[in-house]
Image (tube, rainbow, N blue to C red; front, side, top):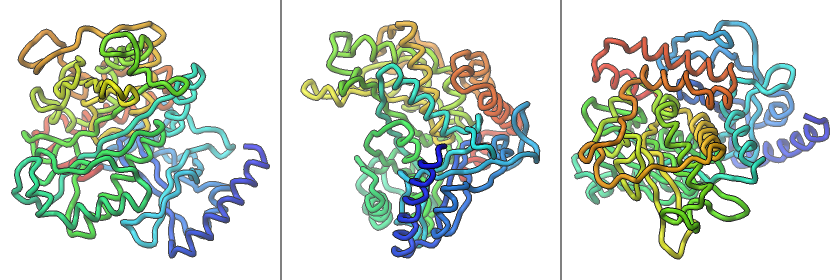
Length: 442
């Protein structure tokens, strides 16, 4: 980074630090999300923000090899005690945390000691994919839905107003904290499973969407703790029950036009919009290792549960892995697609980056979507089942030249090593043992 850019960033950090201290903020939590899907943190005094922006904060690269239970594996590029990285916060995302008095938060990018981009940094990978799309004149808008389950739970019916009444103070405080932090909340409501809720936020740029996924989750966690509740973000809480999803909505844009709508193709898509989505659909068996990366994910990914267990797409079809939302005829900007098979065990930066890579490959191939499915694919038949286990998804992932090239060998191999180690970690465990071991980790 050029010296004048560093000076500008340090000057801005001085202003931000003064503002934070004046607002009573004592510490800034700096987070990255590892290959196990867990947000790891270093915290610094708010007044040290200028020094952190200039020199970074040290962190071991061994976290690239951590598993969900905090044990570790290794790949030829990661693991072991050697080496050090520097964490640099993104000041554009700096947020005072309404749910944690005295704290602020910012996501970080990871660099080596010489100032080079760490090839294993998941957030920098997402940024590279955004730039790759921009080089083609394309941009994306994305947004994650966040589902979680609180314990102890009450007996209100699925989607019922009774749950809002029973937890009105809690839900109000979650919503209030998000709004105070500047999060553009679209809706918040009870979900299917007892004690389960969902919040949806407005779409933004892909890296911003991943940042928001982290901020929203940690805000919910903080408010839950204040209310004496335990929040579970794992793919499943109780084996056999409907689990938590982290559905990803996306739309493709060029020169201010939404390519998922306003076209002359099927369901008013443009040709490029269809090719992008066809690339995502074709890559879903490999993408599943990224978006549903835990052995627990496959306890959730069951047919006829709105989890998206089949490799198909459909208009407003909540059983299709890729659900297309056309929007109102007079609102082409609303058209988007929803990847329903992703869950909260996913690293959101890897999820958005991998989806962009797959979509761009579809554009290169001028791919076309197959016929859409109507009804439950488990009933109507004729549509391939997505991988039903993590090892099966990993076989598709490790065979994907598209994802290997996009991620680069260090990130690709470290991620694969973590996922293979987690598959081995839970081999032979019962469904409930897997659920118990993972539900509170994310």
